[in-house]
Structures are given as C-alpha cells and as structure tokens.
Length: 70
Image (tube, rainbow, N blue to C red; front, top):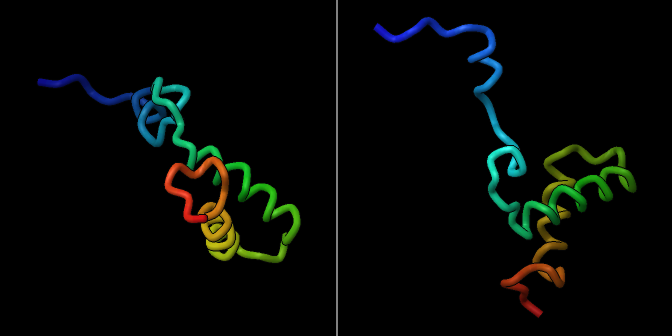
C-alpha cells in the first residue's frame, strides 16, 4: 500500500518555475514576463487579458523573437 500523502507533499505539487526544474526559459516566456510588467505599469486600467494581447502583438516584431516577421 502506498504511503499517505502529507501537507509537505501537497506543497511540492503545482507549477514549478523553469529555474527550479532546470529547464531553460524560452525567449517568448522571458519576453512575456518583462513585457506584461511594463504594459501593466504603463496602463494599470488594462485587465490581464488585454495586457497579454498587447504583449503578444509586440512579440510578433520583437528582435528576440526567432520567428520574427519583419
């Protein structure tokens, strides 16, 4: 029979950041993290969904985008 789950086990579950899993963050994820913060700072009235849309539009032409459309 498997051992019972404890509160510590429950804390371990959930989304792990790229740094804790050893994975490298993609250029898109790095960009979105910074861009969302900037957009929300400049336009605090925007909800998250609208800010995300704006950041995605900007990503399309951003220099760090490997699939950039000029």
